[in-house]
Image 1 (spheres, rainbow over the protein chains, first blue to last red):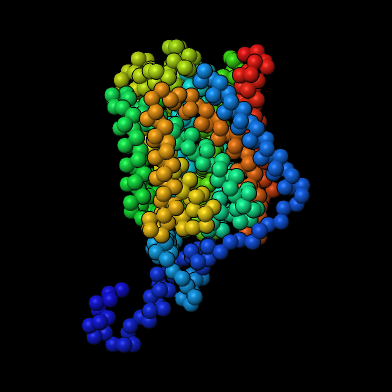
Image 2: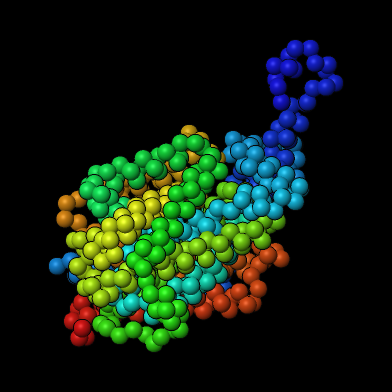
Length: 78
Length: 447
């Protein structure tokens, strides 16, 4: 859109309203893609006690094995 | 278009993304299939070729040098098929929810899980980035250039790609660089392998012999060379940042599949190049610490093969630096709840840009430390990623099954069955190496 053209005698009815211009800027996005939408947090999911326990067990296991790998790595340096 | 003019709070990120999407809409509207493929390609290929990074290519070459082609040639395509299953879920969740992995885990399952994931990512990314700078250093050393040049090159690349303030520009530069991952295939051709040996290696031979800890290290690092936590964060966030939607999922699959095929072919290339060293002292992997693979290849297959392999290592390190820094930046922005997009300006996305450059700077400092055990870091980077991966994958599967988020695009039963098998396999590989090597290090079992 040529803004200079607007100010040089284009009839009033040919002008795009500012709202329309803003619309054109994002007309190829889904509403859910707008930053204003993605900034809103999604609702929290309810985890069952079993699922939470399983996740914690996996987390503890991963940390323990990571510590073993790090220990071995440091040991191999000596 | 579902956005309406009323109540819109538009940002520069929105308008930049909309411009990219306008081209996708035009290509789709005019049924220009190849153009549409070109426009929607990116996150999948970059995740896969980004993971064909320095430590991965060193791991493949070490596999070849230690054990030859027999076991690993068929294993690498299987591992990349596994990677496709994981990465397709990331792409699908990113395209449908328009949100990154870190932010979604944090909001959906609680802050603790979000921050755990971010901490895992930061640790593995930092170690892996050190390995990427090592890879560039090893490649440059072939051309008699030092670690200072490696650091300058890596950091300049990160800053340069960030300077455009557009996702599209960053992605196309990274894709252009990633094309040179094909140098490993060229290296394989230059070592003139016996075609019969390569073909016969496709029969899945029994597990190779040798020391169990070395074999487990190579197996765990080979698994870690195909799927890692940063790939999960990166592909989901990049798919959202690119502006992909549920309509683009089919093309996202093509993109991810193309990345997996290319990465497997180039990975096998590195393996074949490394296998040329098998009968020339290759099994002494630690011997490569000083000389490096490029020099070793020069002695065996000529200077062209060595130079191509060295250039490949520089490329592999450079592309991975870009994608790994990006994954860190996405995670930092998502967990902090602030702007995280290449389409935002540095002023509007200060955390994103600072994390992107900051982690690269931190890794660069490590490789400048005299006497740092860089090769050992490079091999262990993949192992650490393998060990921490199952947790990230479990949350990925949970998100992909979340019908409140995914609707009809949620996982099918067959996808879940394969994904759970992959998680179990990755967990076993990491745990087997971690426990076996720990027991040996503490002298609780013999070597």
